[in-house]
Length: 286
Image (cartoon, rainbow, N blue to C red; front, side, top):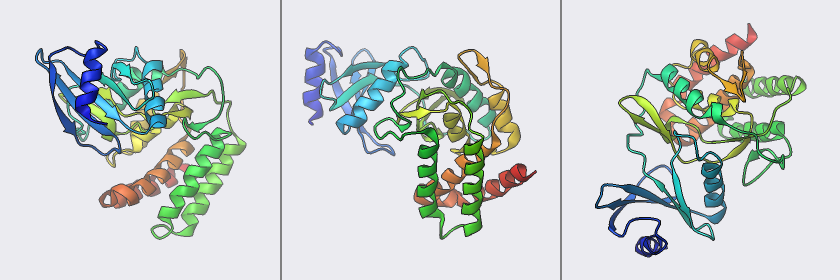
């Protein structure tokens, strides 16, 4: 769809100022088309185009959490979900290394603690491709990860993660279905002056809020320590109920999934994650 036509439609609908004529295409690690629109009064907007089911899912997430300041302010959704428009969040996506504890605290307090249960429990996992349970969603993720890791890890590592998953499955807690960001990693974080100020590009998931926290923790290879995740969890509260401890087994599962992501997208980080993998295995065994 021609961006100039989109701009004309937005002006006609009074969604952006008449003087919004300048635009440029934005690049990023996404299959979406992104355009930055600038008006003469220095106000900026982002137009995002993708498949209708993707746009609908992301727009629903932003509307569901419209009062969360870490998320973009959604301004307009095209009625057939060809695109939507949100306010531009100034800053950089360059992650400031050695700042993970502070970053995770800001993420927990500014986003995860604001998560809410979905109105009805229609499924779990990816919002546009739901599973029948949270465990089946996680198991599918583990099985898919193994297809990338079979030539990089011994089979014993896969058996270890399956045994660990089965243990947590048998001891499964009563999880409430929350609407999660789903792609909550440093590649989708906005920083200003070294501080986390924005979270963009949700790929919504219905599940346990700790999923997003562990995803963020594992999304960069630095500071993957017990002390760092303990610090983040000490700030974690959902609906006013403080969660006093983390299930370390969940961290190991998240790390296994991240090893597969490394093979696909960040192979240079694999050895650092592998070191963290054996570090966390030792914690579990003890």
